[in-house]
Length: 185
Image (cartoon, rainbow, N blue to C red; front, side, top):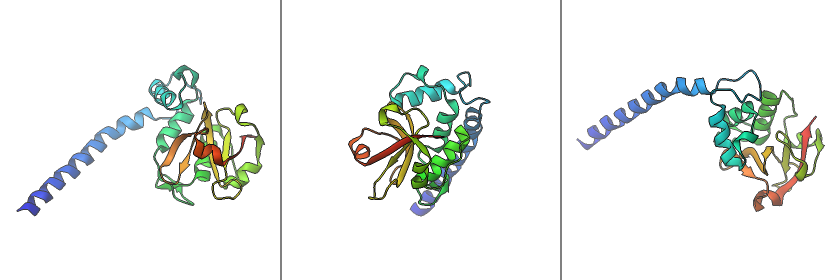
């Protein structure tokens, strides 16, 4: 009797969750349609996305203007890490950086963080601008991790434990392993 009630309850929960996701999906798709310009302040959902990421980065939303960048990050946020992964089922840091740079900025990069570090114009951390790359040496190897700088010492990357996240470059953990930064030519 208990097993039968549990099965009925499980069926109801699964059905409700499927219906909820089906009903909410068109709205999600509508708000994440790409705009014709990468700096579109007039996009219907740009205000929401700019406010969301301005809070995370710690800046005024009026200072954000690259809607495509933050829409892209929003679509990938929380995607799990998978070494060698290249899609939303799992992705590694260099693949994510590669996809972001191509889709948002139209720039092709080599596949590995180590090779990416060789093709950037080097900068000091106080010269970084949105879209620059930041590199780390976590495993004692040169440039084994990469992320994309957003501003105010924040960068987006793929954490091995948390997936796609935004972190602070000056966090003692990241700052300890920070090794290079630069802009993509």
